[in-house]
Length: 170
Image 1 (cartoon, one colour):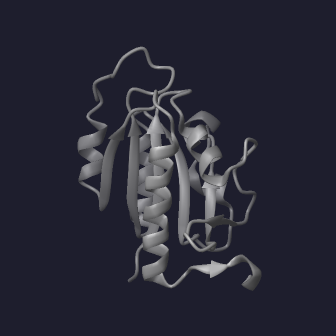
Image 2 (tube, rainbow, N blue to C red; image 1 turned 120 degrees about the horizontal axis):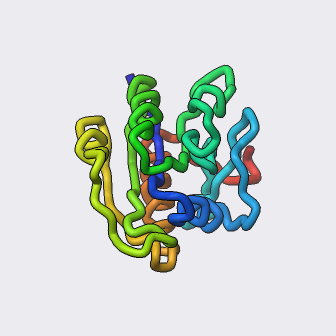
């Protein structure tokens, strides 16, 4: 079975998770999709792919991923903010169970963190047991580099899957 893709950004409150999505979409008021995907420009020649955004982590909302997505199918690509707490494992296990590859950026230190913090809950070790690629990024520095990295990953994945299109075609 072909994998779907989860692009996750995890960190404390105000660590830069939403800033990542704002810069990715070039939209200061980006919100969680309401029962639908949106197009995201990812290619150097104006190529787009469809993504489902969860901005504002399930942990902060007090909801499960299922309650947030609420679509009749599972989107091929989900972008998701995740709070760095023990129940982040539930969110990632949901995606793992539903055949998603997890590409995760851990913002540590986060934008409002006063220092780099340890993984006292041993979450990163658990994430690495999943079908995932995990990287630590500094949320205190400009988000442009990490956003470009995410965009390139989404572009290459979408290209391999054949899910790129030009905006005038869709």
